[in-house]
Image (cartoon, rainbow over all chains, first blue to last red; front, side):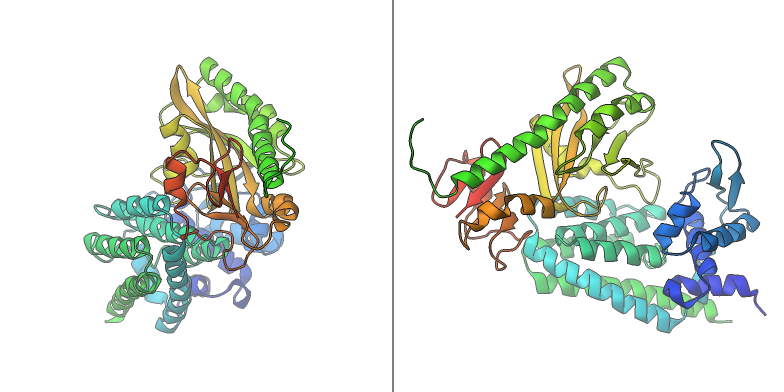
Length: 244
Length: 233
């Protein structure tokens, strides 16, 4: 029998915050952020009140989550005037930590979150094609180039930056918010460096070209295919991890 | 100038021009403070000294203001960012300045930074989705800051597009349905028509070409004073 906490914390990654233990979900997000390096070692966390506001939960819930993190040694609390909660990044994050999490994901949840992401990123690409100025396209080209030789965390960052730029080029604050939200909800899983950077870079270049030519339908189609490719690779790794 | 004839749109052109000059005017004390602090101590640790001028610039249409350094200008940090959002009290904005962090977003690619750097002139960026600071649809006004004659960064002010729209809407409405204010790329800032909404690009007139040819008043296009904003009728 698996330990209850870690199992639900893992599946929490793909569930809306309302549906599982809220403190566990907040803790899971923070664990992701720390183990993925989104929060740096020694970085001070926002105050309990700020965290509560950001997650949309009570301060009591945040406090509970911080207790869990403290027990895992990922956060330490200092007292006094310059006190607060500080990140303690694991000295040697296990290189396969992502794969361990991926093993816990269900394919039905992966499909559902994938559908949502496709709807948002596809619509953003179509609008970006209608609304991008040469300046926007130049920024997309720079973001495309970032991926050319990227690996590891740089690959993840370049993927996220590119899709963020597309959403911004759509001139839509709401789609941009959704893009950021989905990226953080997926906790870096979607853009794990599983595929070839060269191939991903070619796909970004093709999406950028479609946007530059104001071909909204093509930009949407290519974006959807790009995302489906990433989801396929995730599903493959997931299934591989389940094979005894 | 005692010509009593008024061209359609004069009032809008004058209002937009006054509004733009008003925002840039409020950045001048901040510009002076940034240049003097940098000349004295080009360090991220010294940037807090411009806070009085930053908070002084906030208010009215200006919902965010501050200074952003060019890379490798400061002695103690590759990047520098001292930016505050309006409120009582104002709150400081923090962004990741560590290029190794997954959250790092390279602001040196943003037009509010590159245009003043490359032209040496002030700039109005947007409308654009400011995912770095306001998270909102924004116009960002920036002025280049220099240190020893070289580009050292920008001081700037953020204005929400919806507030800009609110300010100019009454006069713009009186011009009828084809009227719109565009940026130099031909992107609609405010218009009277849902067919040509905010954020869309006007494709009938080649605004970028007209702009780089000198922006002389022509059929349907008029520059609003010394600003990079165009009235189209």
